[in-house]
Amino acid sequence: GANNPVDEPNMDDELDTFIEMVFDQPATALNYANKIYRFFVAIEIDAGIAQEMATELVNNAYDYIAVLKLLFKSEHFYSICSADPDYFNGNLLKSPQEMLSEALSFFKSDLPPFVDSANPTIVEVYDHFFRFTTSFLFNRYGEDSGMKMFSPPSVAGFPAYYQEPTFDQNWYSGGTIPTRYGLGQKLVKDWNVGPNIKTRIDSVAYADYLSSIGIDVSVADDLLDEVLYLFPQEISQDRRDLIKGIFLENLSPINWSRLWKCYEGDASFCEVGFSPGNASSVRPHLDALIIAVLSAHEFQLK
Image (cartoon, rainbow, N blue to C red):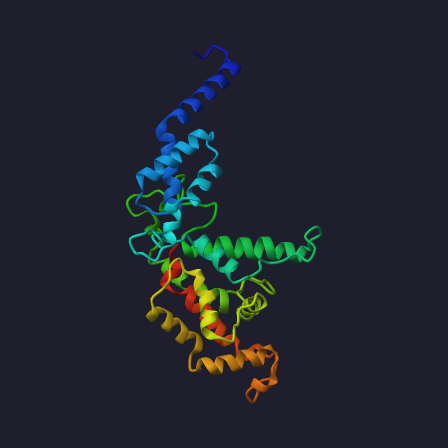
């Protein structure tokens, strides 16, 4: 009643007891396991695997790292890497943030840097936290892709993670599709979020990186092999030929090899008008390759 004082110690005990009761229920662990499975594997849940994950959660006091280790070391999870269409690989649409972070990470693009992270300049802080994070990541890309970070449409979160029966299909709409399929063009060509902000993908720098780890970039198929690791499954020969054709445009593989060797410094391979080290001859082809890969429907999947 209104005249009864609150017994705070007992209230805390009751709250602890209530939480223990909830997490002691088998359905709680299974609910967590189902959500993890749907995020990493597929919408259609394998009941046996989910139950194993739920048991692991309970046995490890809900240490989700333990259950993730179980999942990621399982034969079931590695089956998603199989080219067999009966397996799950490529069965989920990536979220917009997964697409962006994967593209920037895979192609070695830097976020706005701090020359000295311990003593950043005012301009660096502004570029990093306002122009990139607020203007680009939250407002521009977040709004257009349907995933404005920390601003879901309701307290339930983003519909792609919970809304039955469509789940991840909710990432697709008339408003978000152009942004998803246009991500490569924007990152490589014309997404200007402020002066000197390294949000774009530098295709030549990526090719230089591949060369530094022993990939012969002058061989078109070797370069293509590396770039296509971005896809969750091996693609058909027709799709590979299409992407290769976009990359080479009107060049033969031999002429691409000459262009790259000229860029790397061998003047004997340089055509008239190009000098060793000049990236202008190779950049259009490398840009086209990265845009084609990031615009492919295979990149939409994980």
